[in-house]
Image (tube, rainbow, N blue to C red; front, top):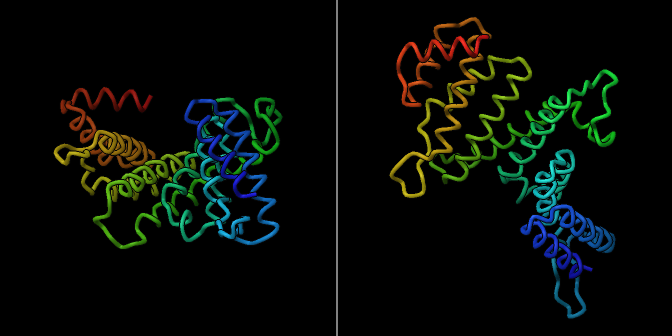
Length: 269
């Protein structure tokens, strides 16, 4: 019943907080099993023995399970759980930019893992993958990442409030930087340049005290500048590439031309 689903979900959360991730995933699985049996009886509400109607907590459990799966580096499962979460609750989780950012990051992490293992999708070297699902997921991981990150950006902008809360702005910055990485991997520098021009023309976020710029926001901007530098180089626009590089060195406390030239030579090697 629903109470059992909540019980195992709470057990999973406790074990996840304690770092016992595999045990947490076991309890999430049991919790989802109770929910699925309950949903076969009704659509969205369960009436308990005392007559109280309780909502089926499928989306919440899937959300928690997705976070746990990503910590276990099971990126295909993390994406699948969050995908089901937003599909089950499009008016709540489906409008949360964090959910789409999480799915996009799962796709990117899956792609990076594939590259590190030197597994060739169209070849025969697939022994490093755990199962067929991982291999199939990696085949289209970057295209999935583009869709998820664009949806995250859309959710961040959907309310039309340019002065939204800092958390949503943070999601927006993260999505843009992650999307720039994906476009670089897909050999599409023009999209990277477009993203960089938009993001770098905006002011960085402030820290919680409102006195200084947020360090994480500054790091995102520095990363975006380096992506833009590479994109301009790929596009054959060295003047704009050096402009990005000079701005990067200046923001890092440098500013000398020799330092910029040395870094440019290192990246071009």
